[in-house]
Amino acid sequence: MREGDNKVVAKIEKLLRLGESTNIHEAAAAMARVQEMMDRHNISMADVADHAEERDDPIDDHGELMDFGQRLSKWKVRLALTLGIHNHCKIYLEHYTRRPSKEKVERKISKGKRVRLSEKCTRLNVIGRKSDVQVFRYMQMFLEKELTRLYKEDIGWMGMGAQVKNNWLMGAVDTVDDRLREARLALKRALTGQVSERALVKFENRGQETNDWVAKNKSFHSTKQGRMRTRDQDAYDLGRIAGEQVNLSDSRAGSLTPGAKRLKG
Image: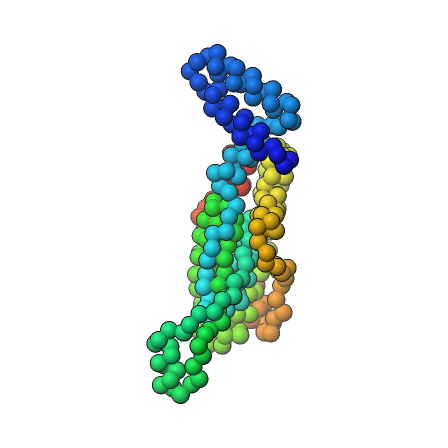
């Protein structure tokens, strides 16, 4: 909608509520006024529905998603960024400092190690609609556990080290990313002809609306997400193969994302 239409839509919503009045004359007058305002401002009922969604399920910063402390897990960051894109959310890293715990300081002193007054830490935050964030969180928790399980069954039992593990898991995440992209295209093809062109465009633009909110309300700079430079190609390739074993239906709890549900509904 154009800027300034929100106030008009808010008035239309009030008139629509009056249109449900048991007073026939009051209801008729309200609905006639609704039609007159929609014609004058070139507003459709779909615009009114969009306004209701923005009001009831607005885009917002939902804060901390995961606190890595001093140990940043690259494959978990990659997974979060991937799922954020597929669930119309924006994931960003936040760096902060904290004082070390008393137990940690005492442990370092006992080992004769240097004690720092502050620690540089990293956490992940998420921005999006509450309904999208809920699906994102479920998929994230499921896939973190499932990919870790598959790694242990495949080569984790060999004790190959952190670098091999990270490369294997990054490969698995990239395969999950490819499969989610394919599923999204298949869904779009299946819905073409079943729903309006406007509904398809709205679904496709859902992620961009989150990006627009970020550009308007946040001042941090985002970086483009790209495939990693692997240091252990064999481990990465094994992870890519294992990623085909993940049951993505389970990761979505057997359902579509909120945006897709609205399309089918």
